[in-house]
Length: 138
Image 1 (cartoon, rainbow, N blue to C red):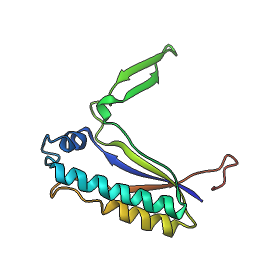
Image 2 (cartoon, one colour):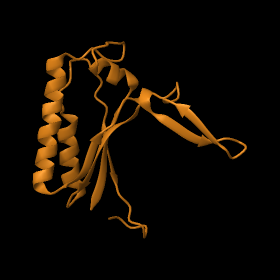
Image 3 (cartoon, rainbow, N blue to C red):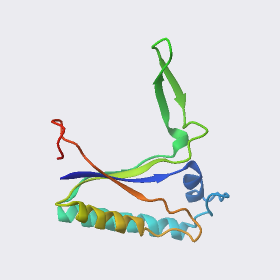
Image 4 (cartoon, rainbow, N blue to C red):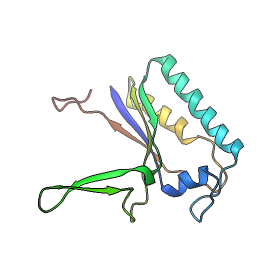
């Protein structure tokens, strides 16, 4: 069965990882950032070895996002960056093929244990089963 495993973040989290502290998060040191990258690299290696990793990517900061909607006249409306009221956005994801919900939950718990500076936000890891085109689970 395929699952999309997602981590969330905010622009302030990306700023903190660039060394800019805020009320939302302390600044990350270079050592803390490298520990996070090493943790994620080891996780991805383990998932690739087990054959469970289909794809996984970190996403760029929300300030580099582009939103495309539809105006009242039906024409596209393009906005750079997230809406001002947006608190959290998708920061990264894994597409995994696992034997069970229990197994993907174990992986999500490992992701949630990623090292970060004391006082940094620790958002939950979201698991969503991927639906087949016929409406059933994959």
